[in-house]
Length: 263
Image (cartoon, rainbow, N blue to C red; front, side, top):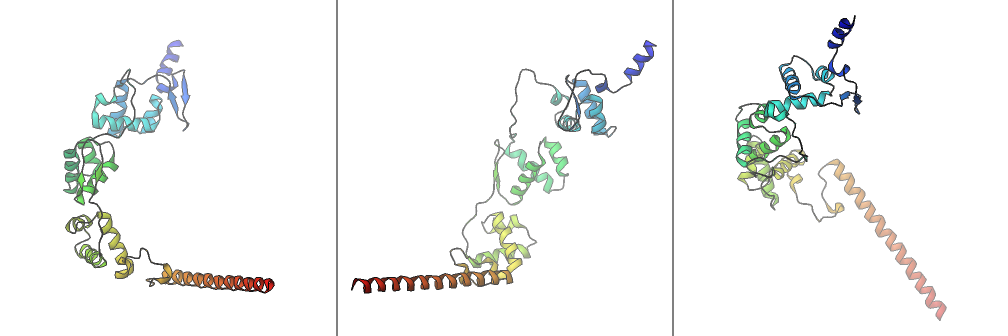
């Protein structure tokens, strides 16, 4: 009888044989004991190979599915060493630093069709796909990628005339909508080109007018909505002028009454 009972317990998932358990905020049971390196590697391999789901593995090891997925991602990028516990060291989560050459090569590879974003991240050990997307955007627009700090910047915006904005928008549209190439050619920012193209497509040349400093009531409408808004502003101004005139007349009459009383 005892042997049968022991065999039955051995067949249970690991988390059911652990006495001390806690429940996280998602309702998953988490072991209070640390998971060994061998078990982490085993779980990562099983998940990567598709043999078991993250939920199943999490249930077996007493961790949530997110932890299993994180182990798998770390194992793919850093191997077994990435799953080792660093004892006596307290880590502060910071944005990882990457060399300028790495950023450029990663962006080049993706734009050359040498792999998906996931493939490129794995090849260059990039932790965030969002970071790669930013590098691609900057590289594509011929902006400069900075190394070490993980930052980047694009060509700065500059002042332009209405004629220049129209020319740039048309050049981008007729040139296959290559915003980055157009930005470099005309020495403006990627965002400027993108904005001008959208405004030109929506409102035509009038959409590229510089209306800064103009009263709304004095502007020429470009759409029906703008016409109604301008008309509303004109009515408001007319009402303000009428109220001012009424108040002025009241003030004049008040002064006239005072003069008559003094006499």
